[in-house]
Length: 531
Image (cartoon, rainbow, N blue to C red; front, side):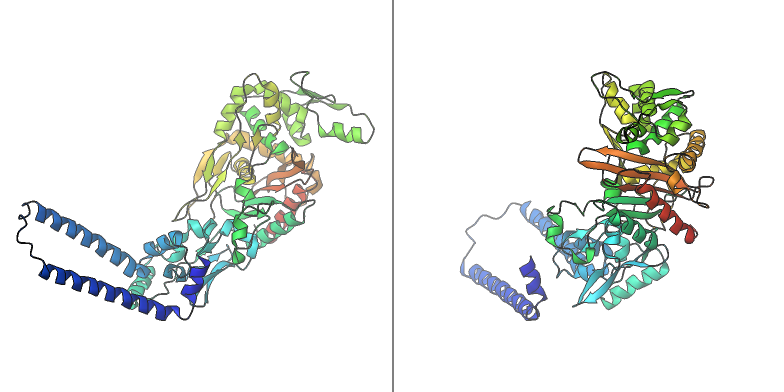
């Protein structure tokens, strides 16, 4: 393909193309001439006359063939004036000399009008340029004649090519292209919900996080699902796509969108789901949380709180939390409490909660004209009724449960939005759409108060900042492949939430010391912008 593309872009190709067309025409004329000579030389009068039905059948077949060829000719010869043809050819014909790749695609802009993608003319072709390089690689995606389409470039392909005519001016522009046989049709500009400054800061902070600089950040508006940040680190540069990017040779997997597809144990950030389940089922009272922890059988090691291990490393004894209520247990992030809470609720209640929270599903963003972008929710492997320890592990976000950062941000947004999860969206002109209800409005309001306490008085108090009123839940998720993952999910301001978020740092350690400060800095930047 590379050799063919080089040939078709070379200066001699035009002359060669004309020569090939002439040679084909001469060959066709020679064949017809020979056929006529053969017919004149051979008498066919001795053959029986054809049956009566044969001539009409041949006529119908001939008409059908002519109709197909006529449709094909109008589809291809008039293709550059037909946006549907352009979109089809861009998706299915990746040869760089394909005229469909000459289309001047519309720009993709952030919510303030900053250019995230645009087309430049280069050697007679429209080259797609991404000013921010890897920063928006997964969200905006790429449009490449060789490697196809991804991200917003894919879901809004028809609009970017000018195929969604929404105004009189759009129709007038298409008419001009038809009359002038323009080979440079221009698509429509699209404004996204993304914020370039916030996205850049998110990528910078994740990349600088020790020890590996990998992770994801999602920020969205709870009331309408508008996504302001959809960051995955590491990324790739869509300006310099090479086959090696797609071979999987890079162990860091830069093509994977960690925000929407990366499945990680959520750790203590998942305790908000158990807290919602407890409130929905009428739980009240206290559970004893001793230092020696909790287990369902002597065959399994006890589930303990992180204070136990901190005291052990320091060479001192720890007395345990003692009796805790739900609000205090959430603020202190007690593993012992929530492991017991999961067992008290039982397998059926946990499964019902998973169904209500859309576990094991693929959730579509509000779609563009050409397709959809999807995020994976939490993944929960079936837990047999006899496996009580597996249920206790899942209740603290370990064991059989994993989740994507985008899904955890969706949970935080639902708590901030009276229990209703709005379908996430990336295009500004797409209307808000309700996804589902995760919990009752009363449960959501009570959780908002608890999560505010988790920051002001609990594990997140290190990021307490005047004026932000952050509510959230830290998470330190044990990981069999290395150091624990660092999580922080939440929303702000707690009294009237305007932004919800999830921050994940791979192998980052404690959520309170790594992920939470990143979220705070992003909220400070958002506050500067009036968000």
